[in-house]
Image (tube, rainbow, N blue to C red):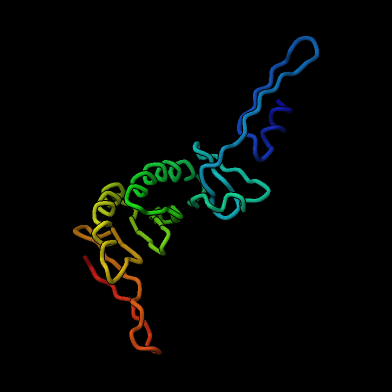
Length: 178
């Protein structure tokens, strides 16, 4: 048991099986961690929601960043796994999934798009976002910056600032309720 705990304490060790072979040998089977995503700033997380800390996360910068309150790791992993395929089908590259302290879900995508799903009826709100996103993205003059899906009968969109037509003028962001 002491040897097993010592091996499991190593960052990249996921599972270890140690058996005694009579009379004086040990047989050890070790499986390596397989990271699913980055967790917070300096850790990685696997598909079972186990967080581990490698010496550097820089080689894994391309992985999606997941975050949440202590004890929410598996819940965040499960949600991420439900979301990833549907967002990729719509041409969205997921950059971050966050469950904040108030249990509010946030999705952040490449292209500076943030989606607020709130904490109630998250699956329904996500489905609605996935349904309306292609229409919003097809706007030729503007692209969505933030989409708030927390409304009962709709959603709100903040659009990226349009380029200033006159030099020196300040771009203005608009918010359109949908």
